[in-house]
Length: 368
Image 1 (cartoon, rainbow, N blue to C red):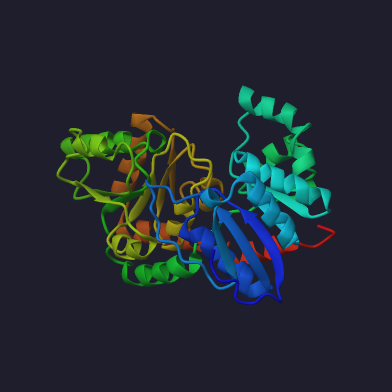
Image 2 (cartoon, rainbow, N blue to C red):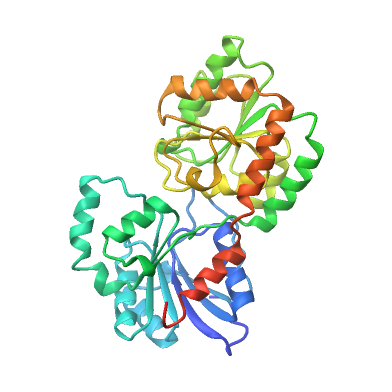
């Protein structure tokens, strides 16, 4: 646990799953701008995304692995927070703590990024929520419109649902975008960038196959493809015939502070996921002024992609659809790509950690 610094501020309790630097940027803004001490319980760092985490003053971190459910409940009751937030409903100990605090009149907020798809599992959750979620959570904070629709079906009243739960660390990416756009007005980098863990749902193999086929058919001009990330499929994708293509580079996992050098050499973000409830990487690279190619399953496209304005969507998992939008980008002029980048940056700057922190503080008010 880190040093709480000042104890005169109000306590809030956040029960999180996997942390990333962009999450901590939001917590830092909340603590600094709204006079709160954030007690943050979190799961261990994911080995496939081993981010180096830095906790701001006013953010006290607790490793979930060191707290059993009893100790977690004791911590929650001892803190007597103004609000408690929990990531979804996957951690039963988190649910117990939220339920206990809700009984004491504390606002209990469930956050999630799962979009409403109308699946049998989701309808089952809707039925079960009448017996469980209503006793555990008073509010929901979700990422976008489809998630908001799910929250309403789970029983949350519209006035108790907030959107915009994720935000990129815009202080890191917006200045980068301003600098890149200023120097790219006449010559745009002909290099695609994919930033994602190498896991089945991210679509790396499809992207490698599509790009390699375009190259071998003489349709790719002098474009290249760079990929950053790590994960269970990394070696398999890298050793595949298309993954070894001379114009595809696998850079491995990059820390947040290493991504600037990568983005400076790339021109278009590609996220070919077959399952991507949101995707903060989209917000990050919109801020950096990159045009977008996103699959139909990328939730963040609803907020950060205007079809034909700053990029294109394609049918998730469909090779022909992906090749079609890759061709469109490859055939775009530098001035057209620059105009897309300007649109991306405008979309990216419309939501920041400060906006996130303001929403978080609104959930602390008794009449929220």
